[in-house]
Length: 357
Image (cartoon, rainbow, N blue to C red; front, side):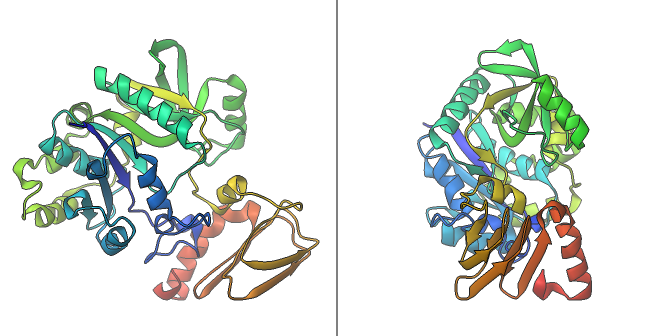
């Protein structure tokens, strides 16, 4: 019996990737990289050899059930966990963990976002397998840390204790969420910090104990026993989410638990959270442009253009821009101002309505 399970979190809207990521079709269900597979499909494929298909569970919004079934047709309904409302990552992890533990109390769990890029798949599997080995033997929570290459202010940082090791793992001292540039630079120079990839590994029993210790209100809501895998599950989950607070697994458990370790790796990772992150991981032409579509450029540099291929786009005199088209929306934005996109989306929703959201 394979005790390894993967929980893929696929419920976010990805508003910073607007207009490509929309409420009715978020980025995890799209082929953003032009590989022929969506981000969700790539994520599921990534765990082949680590666990069988029947041990992959997807947690997503109930509105995306059809998208999951279409893109991952091997999934049984019991493997697709539908959230009636968004409540952040702690309820998402609790739902899947308590459900899987009901079927297999010996389960080892890998928690992975659905929308990340990993370019070095073999190196990634080595890191995951090494972390699984330690988590299976010890009552620990493991997070995957990425060797930072620049003082990026868009990522969370993990401070590593070099002198406290458990096999290939290091004890975590602190978590810092999205520091300012000056602090990020200090983190990079110190050599003591890794980026927080948001990928976690632990035994089901370990995380359940952590919920009971640090988030007992959330844990007790999802401690539903034989309700899981029954006809009553969906209705019970609807009422459970209505009572559950909005809290992340990082803030609710990882920052509080005393037995958190990091497995560091370098496997071509990006959380693909923003247009800028897509620009950084994409192949560029001789003018440092990333072009997706039928596009001609003149005197244009450091620019990302992603357009529908059914029209010709000619761009002249641009530097450091994002131009992105999807459906009925065209975005033109300076790349160094992309943090304003969330505000653009909020304004569009207020002034123009949901058809552009």
